[in-house]
Length: 515
Image (tube, rainbow, N blue to C red; front, side):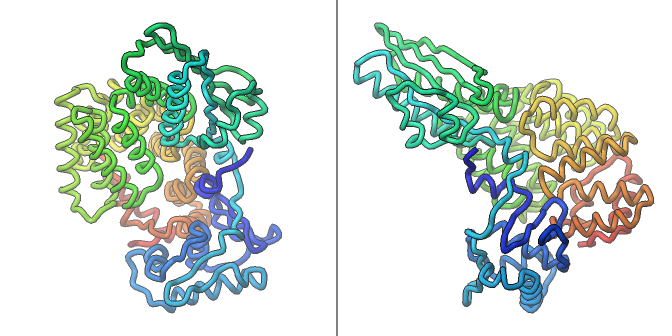
């Protein structure tokens, strides 16, 4: 399958360059199948350089990324760079270039992300020109505009690769073989349709085909009045986009959540915000998500769905500290959005999810568990709601109850993010199911290299496997250099304070950096 280079960079967990392979999952640099010795900070620097290849990286950015919250001199950076160039040898002579008075840049033409099963499984779709059952120019114009609108909307879907119109429109006007189209465009799914006008009625048919199996996996017919063409186009586009989100990416929660926003521009901003919120754990992505959803709210001011998601974003800021805002300020913003959302829709699952998080941070554990159960009650098929509510219930001392919800979240979401595994692993661990917990945490690490490793450190240390715990802690430091005991303590809340204290002590004993 033809791959999108940007998509591969985002999902690859190994990179090949200058005769070496950098394995992010295991935190190792190899050459010819043999490990290459490199100091921890030097390996962290190499990882950051490779993942940001083709872009000039200033010294301040690199120092902040590799030595967060620690003041070091330029000499530390220079020494790490010297280490890297030494191990790469002659094959890496021109791989990392010094840009005078600006920083460093890696030759991106030499970096080859290695496709793994996660990248390969990313859904990809081509939308073919719709057939027009008439010679009227008006219908031809409408059909063309409809497909363009569908392409623009689908391109904003989280986790979906959409082939641009100049490629798919090459098939206009002829008989096409779905399998051949899929092979030539490098996609698995093909969406096709037709437009027919009869009097003042407009009939539009669409179907989604799986080219690998040759089967039709979804079809729909829209029969509407032609009085308002643009309203018809908006309705069809939103329905198609939601169905694609249901079938190919986020499961049933898409149908329950996205259809509450009926303004097309607001819908697009909604999806943009969703993409930002799931792209990374950093400050910029949080700010961009909030900005997109707050702008969408000006277009759709009575959307409880938007308010519920904004409430959850501000709770996440309070928990993780994405911005410099004091925790109390972010919590207050979250509470305001929760109140507004529930005033409009008392059964909004995302608002109850945010409320559960707020109560957890305030250590009102009984009330947090009640709010989590409400979220589950009103969103029984929303994977995000189930997953986070399972985290809250586990934190409130109800790990056994949480397991079923976490497992259902994973079953409901075909392309669930890695943190689902983290939640499930945490519930397993605190319910006493160590082996199952380890498997779940390894799944988290596989989807998001470095995440889940802290939990594995805790399990290993508490099982008396100190050597393994220290090795995992070193791997954690390479893949997540900003992770510290202090950051763990900031984001974890337990009704069993002794258990939390024990977990923190385990991280310290294994050598995880303090702050």
